[in-house]
Image (cartoon, rainbow, N blue to C red; front, side):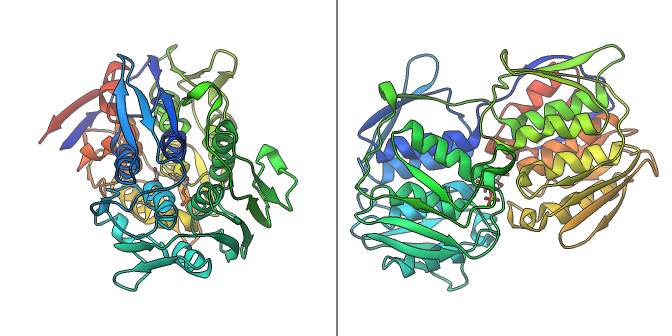
Length: 445
Ligand SMILES: O=C(O)C1=C[C@@H](OP(=O)(O)O)[C@@H](O)[C@H](O)C1
Ligand SMILES: C=C(OP(=O)(O)O)C(=O)O
């Protein structure tokens, strides 16, 4: 499907979908447990891949009630050897978290995914599991899926880099809790995407499992930032208080709605986003970033609402070390703002569903923006020229697609984003929500 966006004003109230990161962890944590019910889980393509994995390991995920709650009977710490290959689809989180689960089984699991996922790096996680005496191999011997993993991980101490994906750490902590020995991780580099490890620690804690960062003072409220390593004791059991878990709203998804409000809210109008309760998500930094760019934005944390009005924006500098998923949104904001927006520390954003640094540079240029791309820095020279509508590629990447759609709201003339059905990964009704806010959107198959 291609979407065609015409210049539009937006206003009104929208609810962001539930958090993809919390949903993955809650589903897998329930899989590690005896039984749990997950409320407000995100129903989109990526968490469905994690549901498939839990089922494959001998759990059972069933939708109960009208509100889509998931009742999950888990494999209780001991995953069965799956009957078939696990297809992780497009989901890096599923593949990384589930690779460590597969290492616990007394036999081998084969994990694969789509073209994008089969090109993403898994090597450091495979090496760590091999060091810990499990079997973990890339079939093509290139550190990428398909993967063959298994042979009863016992735990132990292992060194791992933190600058490629934090998901390796999250995976080892979740699996480590049910090993005999526990796992001690020593980071060989600085940890990027640290708030995502905080999300893991929070969900573990909510399921009664203790894991801790080592050697950090929790700078800026991010517990895992600056950690030298992590430790999780073995022999722990997963069980959420009261047998249930509630997933909070997703700030990465909210970023597109807030950006839409900041660049395209009608005169005197505003966009209000609901479901914005504070949580460990680093991407709530979007509120501060918009504020620094001059947006009229306020976050009512008690009510969980964020209100943003149409604003003239000016460029700023943002380090996305902790918030890689915000890069596409910030790049679009920078293209609309006056002056330079400098996105620093973004090398790891190249290892996502696509190389998002290069994708955003190419497609925003196609819309008339001027950018300078370096390996770890993307500079958007805002205000040099107005954006003008064009056909841009979505790279089968939900975040590239959603952010380019926001740019389409203010580009002069119509903008077409190709392959837009990939919003199904994290925000399946994104275009309906944007259209309800007043955007003029057409689709062609
Ligand atoms: O653990 C998670 O839920 C995620 C971690 C981040 O990836 P990296 O840790 O690979 O940067 C983020 O980009 C991804 O969208 C979700
Ligand atoms: C990178 C992402 O997710 P994953 O790593 O799970 O594919 C994302 O949602 O932007």
